[in-house]
Image (cartoon, rainbow, N blue to C red; front, side, top):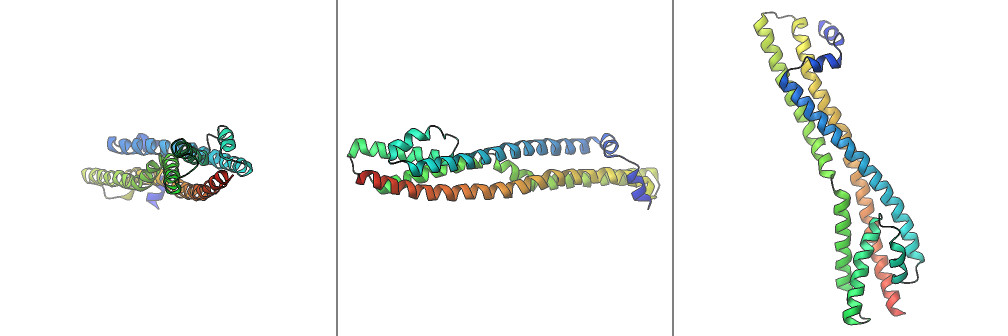
Length: 225
């Protein structure tokens, strides 16, 4: 087929170098978006892996601790664990109530403080995730935009040349389709990473909710003693 033959004769580099200015701008935008997405993917993957490992170690120390003061001392070693952030919120609230009310702890206020700690940690974990969602959603449309403009230019050139053969228009169409391919190449990894990491955030959030209950139980045992 003439179209396929003409496409195979052109490398991707040749297509990009021979593209129009608008097509190059579109490809540059997609490249920047893809590079930022991959940077975020690797950074978040490392963050979640470290958080999961630190959570496991901190939770083991928390369950072995006899009281809150012992946990507070051990928590300094696990500052990368989201559970440590939740614990700090709760422990600070317990200390404030002990100073103002003695041994009486307002359980409702403590539960609210723990929820604030959970919300703070989730916000930190979700940071930069919106960029992945934006890249996954917008990149295909940016690529399609570049493709449409490229096809328009190809047919305008075909009309000016007065030739109706596929061999004449195939290079222009091939050049235009590169933008769509680039858009999909940027969007697919971002979409996969967003869904996988979103599931990881939900798991960590559930773990923090369970930890809040364990914190309340330890608090009750601490004041019963």
